[in-house]
Length: 585
Picture 1: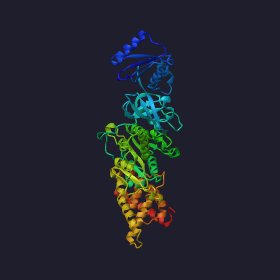
Picture 2: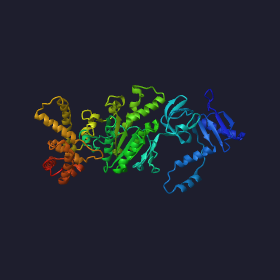
Picture 3: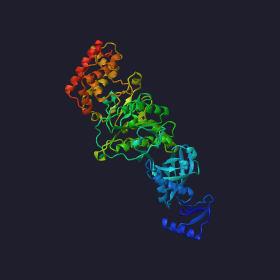
Picture 4: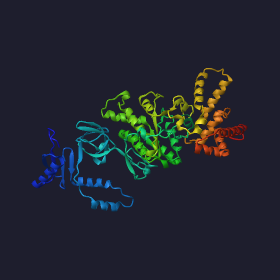
C-alpha cells in the first residue's frame, strides 16, 4: 500500500499476531525485495486461520489456503497431459510442486456499468491484458487512466460488482488454435458451442498481432476461385487478397461467401467463417448447410451472435483471424469470411461510448478506421521463407439503400483490394448473384486468373457495360435497328448466362467452356427461358466429348487455340441438337 505522500507501506493480515522473530524475517524480505526499508503494519483477520496475506503497494503475497490452491492450479495448467496420462501427471505434480514466494497484482472494482468495469489498484496493467474477476469472469483492458483503468467484460458481468477483487493474468487476449478446430463451432474465446465436447488446442495465439511486413510477403498471383462465373470471369480474387462484398440487406452477400467456401472442397484450402451479430438460427442453418455438403471438414466457425455481448462481438473477428493465422503460418492457404463488419463497427461504437470516448462521424469513435485496417492488413500471401501460406479475406459490409459513400463502407473500400457490389434492383429482378458490373472491381485483376480464364473471359465485362448503357437509353425508344436489337439480345443472354443457383459453384473448366461459347456467339439465338437447360446440357456434352480439354484447363490452366475451336465446334453441334428438340427439351 502507499501512504498519503506516496511512500511504500506493507500490510500483513493473519488470524494470529506474528512474533518479533517473524516480523524481523518479514522486514528482511521486504528490504531485499524492494531495496528499501518498508514500514510493516499488522492487522488481525480471523478469516485467515490457515495462513497470511502480505500486501505491498499493489503486490500481494497470498499464503492463505485459497492462495496456495490457486498457485497449484496455475502450475497444473502449465502442464500438457496426454489423453491417458492425466493421473500419473497429477501424482507427479503433487510430489514435485513446492510453494513459491510469488506476488500477484490485485485490484478492486470501483464501478460496473453495462459491460464496462472500472478498476483501481492495478498500476502495471497493460492495454489489451486479460483480467480475472470473481467466479472466473474475464475482462480485457481497453482504457488506461491515472489511478484507474476500464475494461470490457466477456459475459457474466452481473456477477461483478463494486468491491470485487480483480487479478492480473499477465497475458494479452488470445485464442486457442489448432487443427482440431476444423469442423467445430466456437465462440469468440475459443470455447466450443456445438455440444461436441472439449477441443484440444495445439497452440495459443494473441488475437491482436502485427501484419506481415512488405519483405514477408510475395505477390498475389494464385486464384482463389469462388465457383461463380460472374466473379471469377470479371472480378477475380487471388490468394492473399482482401475483397469486400458489399450491398443492402438480403441481397445475397452471405450466399457468395458460402458458395466460395463450398468451392474450396478438395483444393487444400482451410476456411474460417466469422459470424458477427448474426441470429443464432441463421448461423445454425449455415453450419448445417456446410455439413450437408461436406464442407465442415475443412471449415471452422467462430460465432458471436446478436445475443452475445458487444465485447464478444468486438473481439470475434480478431479471434477468427488468429485461428486463420495459425494455418497460414503452417504454410496452408486460408479463406476467412467476416460476416459482417458493419455490426462489428456498431459493437465497437457501443463500447467506445460506454468508455466515454469522443464520438465523431455517425457517432463512431475516431479510431474506427484503425479498427478494421489492423484486422484486414493481416491477410497476406507470405514469402517462401515463411512457408508460402496465404490468408484471403472476404469482409462483408451492409449498406443502407445502396449508399456506398457512408462512413464504414468508404473506410473498408479504401482498405481492401476491391469490392463486389450487389445491387438490390438486380437481385429482385432475378439476377443472382446480383453483381453490379459498373461499381464492382478487383484491383488484383488478371494476376489472379489462370491463362485459360483470362483468354476465355475476353471482353465480357466491356460487353456487359455496353449492354447496361444501351438498355438505359433504348427503354425510351420503340424504333430500334436490327444491330441494336441483336446487341440487346446478346446482352440479355449474357446476363441470363451469369445467373447461378446457390450451392452450385462451377469448376474452372465449366466456366471456361461457357465463356468460350458466349464469346463465340454460340448462344446468340437461344431463347432466354431455355438458357439454363441449354447451359446444363452444353456442359455435359463438352465434358463427355472433350475430357482431355477439361482436364487440361483444371490442371494446367492453359487453353490454346485448338482447344477453343474444339469447344466451339462441340457447342455448335449441341446447339443444332438443342434447337431440333433432340436434346435439352
